[in-house]
Length: 247
Ligand code: NAP
Image 1 (cartoon, protein in one colour):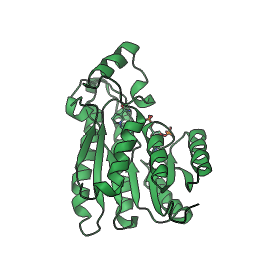
Image 2 (cartoon, rainbow, N blue to C red):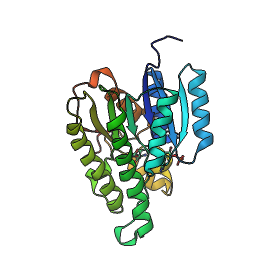
Image 3 (cartoon, helix red, strand yellow):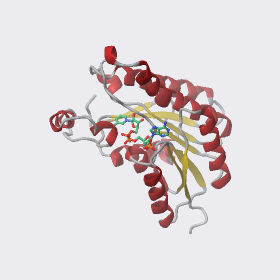
């Protein structure tokens, strides 16, 4: 193995499947050692780590619920012990269950805010103390925030909070040469988007962007690769909407 390969360390939350798994694969290809975080999909996470390891990447799977501060602290500790001090944090873990605000239970509200908002808060707070100077943070918002579609009130509220974290945290890290940005995908063909939708509903979403298709996880992984790579060094505190032109 090239001695320089995997000299930099990335944590990708929610990387067992969907966009997070594509991001983990892409960052491994870009030369990062990768901590693959997941909450419950241990088989998928272990399989991804085996795949990355076989390709010469230093990779570990870490079970941690991002909404739990102790889990997140342990995730950073284990990553430091097994891979090294963190250079890149990708806050990808998230949940969505579209539902009119009037029908949303207290439990569903808490679930969305616990994972999407508190989860991002937990990792950002830990990263502030533990990341290498010169590092990169990529949070996950959503293009739905700009579309204001019925059913997305709670989800959009969580992503508005993530965008607020992004803008302010970028400034709070002054002097550390760490950039903090967010990517806001449009509809991407993952379980989060597809589950619970009819073929007709999926087709309607696919036709929304002028590029006339759903996004694929690799479309978003490419954007994360840019934001964590050398060419994005002057991009800071921004939200990059990657959605085929839907909004
Ligand atoms: P997905 O396919 O449902 O995957 C979600 C990932 O998050 C899984 O790996 C899951 O792991 C993990 N996760 C869920 N709860 C977690 C927790 N409490 N702690 C740690 N990991 C947790 O979702 P996706 O479509 O890839 O979405 C990824 C991100 O993109 C989310 O932030 C989402 O809001 C955003 N996004 C997606 C779309 C889209 O159309 N797909 C559009 C805009 C934005 P387990 O299986 O182990 O729980």
